[in-house]
Image 1 (tube, rainbow, N blue to C red):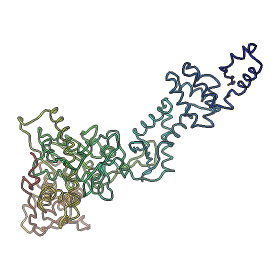
Image 2: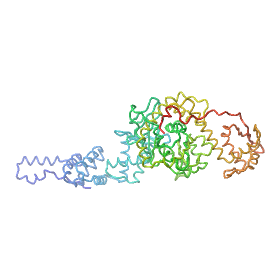
Image 3: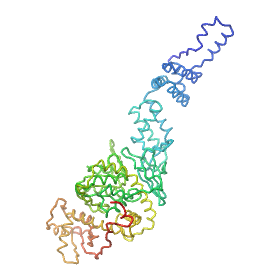
Length: 608
């Protein structure tokens, strides 16, 4: 591009030099000599152009002005950005987009996409900190004046932030291919140059308690300790979010006004004798350092299963889609777990054995692996541990492993004259939700204070939940041991449900009923298969097709029978096949009875 001299505002004086004295002519010539040029004083050229820009939007397209901006961009980027911003403020009608294109054309070897890519990467690295987690997923920490945001680099949240930041700086959009290249570059920088940090979703353990992400616009969190709870503006741990997450209600902001967890029962259909179980489950959802029990809500049509489930979820992990339909595959379960803190399914008529095993894995922590797309050898692994809530008309947890991890609640049918329409229900819950959430936090703090004193002599499989539940019950006014008794009854009822739905257990019960006590049978799996096969079973769809299949079923139902006083033991293999023993153990007395339906004094005072 050929440079052109900028006309001097004083040029008209030179045309009139015959009317002035000679010394004045010398002054004008000196002024012309000192006029700024793009090569000697690009800042001066631009500042002079800004004066004329007030009335002339075409100034930014003049060759000297474009060249001055190009020189500054190549040699002094901060000054270039300041003066470019000054041009936008001087005349809002001017087009800095056109200026940017002319500047790129002026610079040697410039390329639109490459320039935008470099600018995107430079902008992100200047305004955020790039790190990675233990799985080498890139994470961006973005400090802001009033908050700190944390996004995974490959997330819609970070991409939206980067697009907005680029628009504010350049008033230009970003092509999709350029954005993908920028995200890949930033991810590589975070993985290879950044520090490893621990990233959490919704809940996290801290030294003296737990942190709960409110997921609000200010990125605030709740810090719960045995001494109380408080709202913190910047969490001491890194919380990230998914696009479908929604904010928890802001709880009562001061300790002068306590919440009221008893209001929860006005908006749910949880029977009185199950409420302490549900409260313990809600609080356990905020403890990622322990296994999570699954909550199963079962009831007829008209028992408010979905409403109850939505209300409970809104106190733990509000989401764009509060309830989801039945998962089609095991992978669907783990994808939902990767994008939600609380996995929530409704109207389930049944789950496959593989899906029930997947929910067992979620309770204690595990993962799902499949082949990475577009590759031949690498695996894509999703590893999570999440709380789960399910509902259905019939029992959906039928396998012993899942039943051991389930908190089963039967919801009573609501009479027609007691039902409320959705509008009133929603409005009432919107009003009471902050108070209930504050009351739940009060209860959480009180339970954490009691928890160190809780010692269990006998423990169920979900012992961490059982111990927390005992602390919650004591905080509510129950006598020591009452929760443990109620939970033991719940576990025994679950064992009965597991055996009722198992064809082998049904046949075995009929065979044992015909035997004379004490029972002590030994033999091969083939012999037992022949013995049990003679009994009539209403549904043989799950009946094993071979003695080996019978052995597999015996291993699954053995823990349930052991709790009932029948020991099913595998004795090893012989030439005839796998050998088993079925024997009666010592009779077990019922160690517990559930507390009264009214519960303790403080618990019984809660509203119906």
